Length: 491
Image: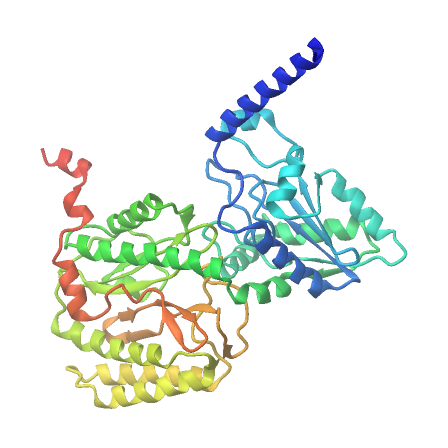
């Protein structure tokens, strides 16, 4: 017969398991379902290969948000761990080839308010989910670094020195923001990365600090199948947004109303944020490629540019289209847009694996022929077209790129080094200007390099004149759901 004390302990354990299972069933997931532990392990192994047995790598995760906004991990930390807990750290030891994750301890009050996080108390679960070798509280990081620093052969410590990318961020703008702070005589703070590196040097002067960013940049340049799947979904939502915006465009509405259409479609289908602020620019606002105020009213006779994409599971897209506000291309719009579209298709048709300069040179030859033979309706259009093509030819003759990478950031990291290889994802967005009329035309598509060619992930979004006009003849979201505030004001 089982002793009473043991029976009570078993009953108590069973009840605890039932309560825990009920609670877990109601909790939101605390780890990504987009990647298995094996993919994160493979990425960490690549970092260990890069730093070698005489090196180590340390990464600092994002801090707690300073506003009422959803936490988003830095791209680099997520890329290697999948962990979405603030103030986490990762240490990769090249000598032992072990990976250690450091997590803050459980904050019961915070979790009671916001929900569960992966913490140091979940060490076994964290090891299972991420595939790391050990999990400790953040307090242990100093101890482990000290042991490395005071060993007989202290390793070279690699940490990212480039700005971390958070929601809606790319390195270019993050760098500009850090520069603005540094140049402000009443501010002058170092970047978070510079501050972290300085603390490492101060506390462990025996450790040499090197930049890990180039290693991570090379790794992120070529995407895995799971990464491409997320970029494809982000591109689908970006394209569907542009198509719905075409349907909803009418003279008299405002740019921000089309921004609202995009936000609805993005978040309806699971976006965690915008990949970047919406670029909705009507008329001459489009002259400024990153105009994003959304404050202007759409007028009959104008072209409108829209460039917008979501962040889906830490992966983005970048698609642009232009269309006439009144739904029908005018003579001058058909003239300039038609020429640009023919040049744009010449570039798309040339893309394949191989040397970028050769590919761009082939496209430039076709574009030069179009600039010579296109029947422009106004004399100053042809010089503008020739300048546009000449600029593209100059880019083709130098060490250039087809466009910018797309991945975890909309302007993604990684240097293709003049060669397109399978698994690369990037956009093309040649910019055509007619200075006399302040006309600016741009299209943009997301291109995946395949083994034997290229796939345009956003090809389903109409760019031909007939397809755009047909789509704009349909009712859009703004027609079906007019503004309640406007209706109240008109009563």
